Image (cartoon, rainbow over all chains, first blue to last red; front, side, top):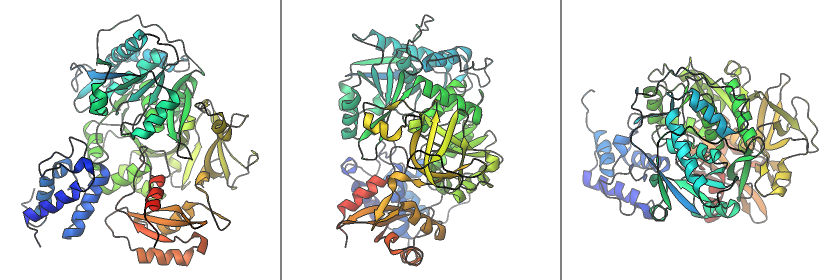
Length: 88
Length: 525
């Protein structure tokens, strides 16, 4: 089922913020790549969390800097999986 | 200790600009040089217009690098009390600045102490206490704001050219580099590498791979680690180009960088190949410039290696073996032997002798498992101010005990049989974690298994950590059933824990110590 955007973003934010003190101040539009907040471990954890919560599966095309730059972008990516996308 | 911050001046060469891909001068022969810094200068003169470093933002030519290294040399030599053998710590990510600081230090007759950028404070303090560096060289991006505010000086790289560089005096067996690695007890040990060690190993690799002046090597292994350093030295001494770009966080960016910056080679540790296979989209688009990929710094499972080899063909896949104590590399498996010598680390590279020995130091015949020992000009001088630890691994005959168990076949190819120092005694039985991991991975190739010993009462038992290698879920019940069926009771893991991913050390290997600590924190039910 397509998740509600607000709840989805809140859930993702909570997941990232609970990573440790450095992450407490992360906001939906905080750049996770610029400050080096998103390392390969957090990325994998996030992917698996989202996949488990929403029954979706990311492939290598989804795992890109553009899609994981902010919590908001990750939410967009998740929601996209529930909408039919125009062919590229 | 003084802190020097390096800054780049803007005039780097734009892509396709002044630095040429096919510079005229060939790299000079290495054997004449006795100092790595001098060898660098010879190359930098012969290959002045060629790119030493290529990034997405532009190229840095050898002429630029020579000026930048000279800037660092001048700063160091001008410091009051500067003396030959002064330790210079580098806290720099892979960057043109790293190369400038490295060779600048050698040209100032200093000793390079490269440190991982993200090194935890306590460990860095321990290393500083051990080797007391005079200077720390870093960049704004690689240092925290507090340290950055207390910086003593800032140096803009790429100043005017001086042709009157005095030749460095240190050479041969003089210490060039102190490479800190984890000791088996968890305390840092400084591997002492001389000019001769580094030059000898570079020369062997240049012949073995071979590396050519027109090569462009993509490097994501940190230069502060033995493999990264080896890739750096070999390509600079060949007058070739180091390509910097891509990040392990997004493995697809590694493959993109390979394609877009036309890299001819890529070398990494096994864990990186695991990530690249999972998320890297390797093989989707052709990589016409790619000549080879190489794995070193650990064992890559044969089926994963075969997958990589198939995806990059006709480019070759090299399996290599080495360790920090040997200036990095010791053995190499020719790509043509990859399938015939399944699981082999290959034969010793030129200038290196390998032997399997028993505990008394006698060489064992083919097929028998013993301690893998190595001898050659690339074997370290010893551990920094630690004669006891040095004596444990270096025998009077010049043989280095690698700590790896191995056997060789009749044709002289070597095969690893586990790491001696990971041996665990369980009820009197000697067990190597690989004996458990191997059983699990044979039955469940999509699971990455790491067995970690755990104290239980007065005994030691194993906990098996599992992480997925792809999207298939891990069925703990099935894996437990297989273990119960195939393993004797003393090898049977007491507990199974599934992780999303394994913690990695700064060398990008599975951090067994961190998994052990995790156990110490969580009580056993």
